Length: 155
Image (tube, rainbow, N blue to C red; front, side, top):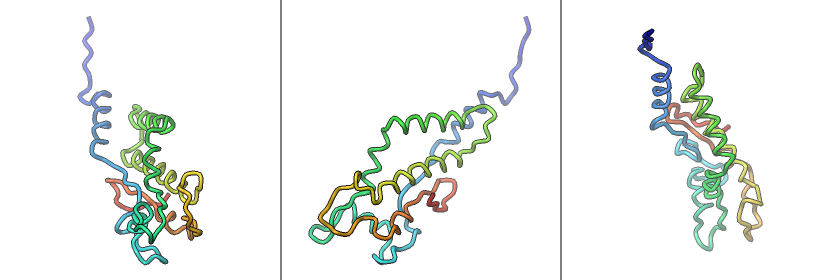
C-alpha cells in the first residue's frame, strides 16, 4: 500500500482560505457623505435621494428610486450572477481577488440603480411636471465603494 502525504498547504486549505477572505467584506451602493452636493438642490446627494423616497407632504412629490432596487435582489438572474461570480473566485488557480468580487457586485448594482432613473416603467407616476431625471446629476453620482477600497466609483 502506498501512502500519499498531502502538502501542508493543500488545495482544500487554499479554497477554505479564499472563502474565509470574503467574510465580513462588503460593497456599499448608493450615495455617500463624501460624494459632495447636488449643484441645483444645494444639498448632499444622500439628502436629496432621501427627499425623493420620503418627501415632505405637500412640498415634494414622491419619486422613489432606492426602494425600487431592493426587490431586484431575489431575481433569478441575480442568483445566476452570484453563482457564476463565486465559481470564478473559488476555482483552483483563479487570479480573481476579493476586491474583484466586491467590484463586480458594486458595478452590477450601481448599473441597476442608474437604470431606474428616468425609467417611467419603474417609477411611480406623479402629477409633478418635472421628471426625476432632470439633469442626470443625481444618477451620475449614484455609486459604490468596497470595504477594501473606500474610494467611490460610479461605474
